[in-house]
Length: 238
Length: 366
Image 1: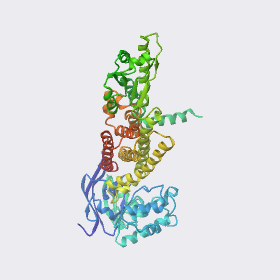
Image 2: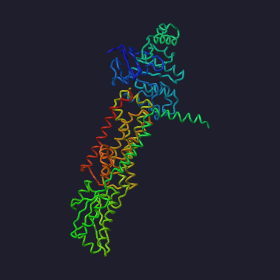
Image 3: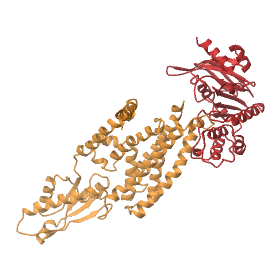
Image 4: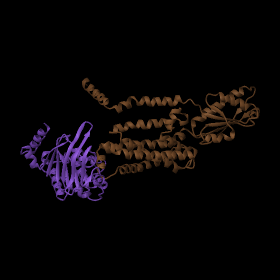
């Protein structure tokens, strides 16, 4: 059991029929770190995140989350998971959704706090079906962090969120990380990647490179993270 | 109007179905299966209702009429002792028995005969052929003794129901269960599928919730709705439609509620095998039609061709329907071994689908 790492992924492979979604991935995420999973669509980011919560069982390798070998239902009390598509109950109000996800994670309180954080407290009585895409995304985030998880997994959390709110999201992520929450964010947006403390570049189910944004830029030989990523991807793919 | 654009839509539609084997099977295999089943059910069951004949007549007429009855194609006769008759009606081996009393021939000489007709009575369709066959037999028997007008006043008694017992009384008992089962099943399977398609099930599975907790929570939630519906259906059937009931209302409710809970769990279980609501809807004819045809709702299981009876005896709805009819028409209670069996099978079914639902929950989302 490790105190320093919130997440340890050891040589994990997973295939869906002929497609190798994960191909020997090894990475470690420290407690209180904001770790960005970067890669094109279909690279394996979502599969990796699903392996972290035990929804996907690896064919090979081990996944350890908060010191527990996955799959492990007990550890999920301390994990918040925001899925790519805003998975909410459209017939319930914002508040009812957040309260429900709090309740199944064992948290009866914190609903107001979570709603204020995503700036939906005023809209708490609105039925989710009537909300815009960005608002749903915010509601979905509130559902993922209402129980104050130690590890927050965010699968492309800012899709459809406007720039100002995106900045606020990131400020909040940083605040949570400073308070000890580990955050893993998947994204294919490079300016979000800049905000992470460390990045893992994933392509074809393999971890191409890992490091701080500065280190990635150096590795890729470019001042621009996007170009660096493309350079790394090109080199490794060929 | 552009022919090309119309053709594009038509082509796209057919292309779509080419990859949707399930829908193709539903379109082209299901009608054959359903119609085939129906045909086999109706044509394959040649058995005429079984009627017992007890000849106590000291004169010759009883035997003559009995012989005429024996030749009737409407019924199948067997000789019974009048004292065994009620027992044979109760165990279901006879639908009726006819007694020609000791003074039957003497009655004829007096110009008025009164054969006793004892009907089982729970199936409204069977009284007709029995009385018709008796009528014909009497006419042909009396014709052999001409020169005399004899009035026929059969003395008809019913073990269950009564002369006012109609088709609704017979089907009502079964439909109370069927309506609840069917509607609850549809609502459950579609909303559980919603949970999948809107992605919330993935979230549930990534939470500390255990599979059993999800299924149980669902079951309780829908059971609340199902029970309210059961009460509504029951009150409407008894108070508004006046469906015949000789049994305990609480017992009817228990059977109805068990079916509803079974339907909830069947819905959860089968939703594992569908990816979209469209596919879920396709389960409806698969689940409902065979049960409708084979569970004895429309045709008594005992009149089905043998191979189909085997199938009927596996369907849980058969037992529920039988139980409801026993309670409502025959006034059965839990001391009846047949009702114990019916309720036991339904409880077993509820348990089986509950366990199956929990066991298969993880399958589809991984």
